[in-house]
Image (cartoon, rainbow, N blue to C red; front, side):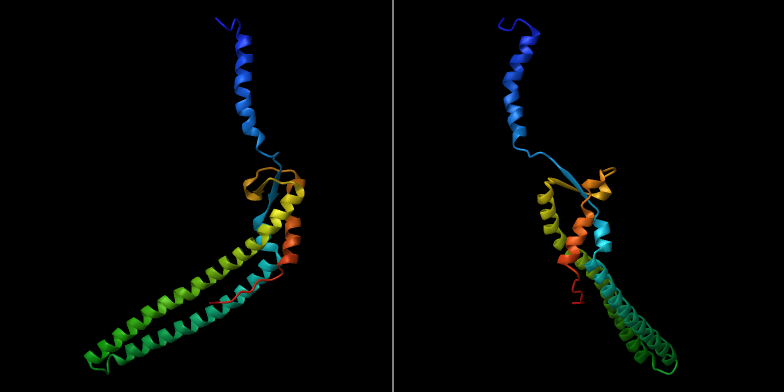
Length: 183
């Protein structure tokens, strides 16, 4: 037998196997972890606050329009009910069908208006995140951070790992406001 002792076998196997595993790890950089609180940035950045104010004004305007249209539909319904007794059945049936079509169209339009608010929120959030990405890349490069984690997924971290405030300052300088408008 070529190998006389167990120790010799382990040493020989280590010499044979180590170069394969050692070279696999040689391509990875030393890992430095950073942490960022995206929810805080999305709530406290100047651009996010500006967008929230603009969206709130648009939402109030839409809510007012919806209330006025609701009242118009209700008034038309009352007129239809009152006219039922004085109209011929065929004429009333025609008017009732027109009213039902109008209500269906109104419900679709109302839903689209309410969904447009959600779309504005999503677009403004994406604008903030898109502006934040190059800032995070630059901060990570400057600090040698190779992995950046969202604070909500981290149970415990050292205070010096958190780059949220630095990112927020840079974002506020880069993107102080966002254009928000309905399409």
